[in-house]
Image (tube, one colour):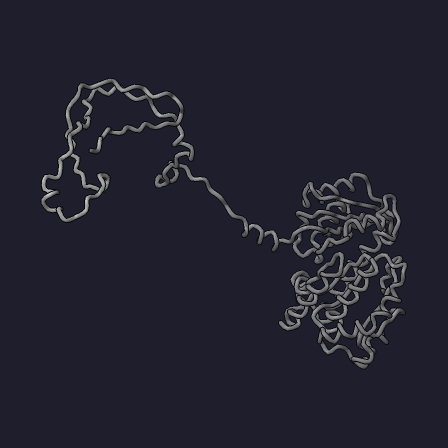
Length: 402
């Protein structure tokens, strides 16, 4: 608020009446006055949630019917920010307002419980916002080192303010090439996780240094924009206006880092307060983070084709229709052919003697004995079967039953 973001109205919502009183922001909404009696949510997200529900009509009235875009800034892990921000985001979604959340996650020294509450609150917030940026306080500690406690939290607030200011002024500050609200809506509508970087510098090599600094921003959690679907770029200059060569250096560098499939939307604006500096602001959306890409790599199944040379124990399998292949021609068989010689039936010589008292049975039911004798015949040439592609031959020995 004190940095004076152009074209933006501010509303502060809190369960702590004392914090509201000392805030310079004119538009104030006390959440859950009857529930908390103005004494805060006690680091309990459920209390913050119910407090926001109690005053949701006041929030909707503040937003009105002319609000097109809403930034929700909150510190996750406590009671009010964690519990109330999803309720406010849900109300904005119902009003068809483009909603972007910029939230901070706790330092590790704030405790595991606070960290867990922050993760749960972020998961709930994701359901209702179009896009969200996560500022990790631990990452700020890695970048800026061992700051005093007051400086550490102040640095987190400054980064959060820079994010909101960077997105808002892309729309509100005019330039030779304007990025309007429709462009921002295209980039951020239902885009999920977003990353943002902003950096300003001067000197002879200011274009390359500015874009490199923007991509090294603490707002860029993974330090890269590879795989982004949309990239919103704003180049601001002051008294020393940006040149065409500098624009080419910046856009080529971003396109190389993001990939050729990224849709780059860029604009230019004039900010005389920059003097000789060149400022580059990058917003990237619609991409996977490093953790998601690594998880996808683990889930990929590799298939290797084995050849008999590479795997000698693998035996080649014949085609399924191999049994239908034409039979080879039969060779002339000159070997002797064995043929069955018909013999007469041996009659039952003693049937009448032993079976005199039995009734006669039919001839079909009588026991018969057949004896076969193999005799040698002259060999003959076997006839070649017709080439039908699929055939077989059945030979039946002629046997008479008497």
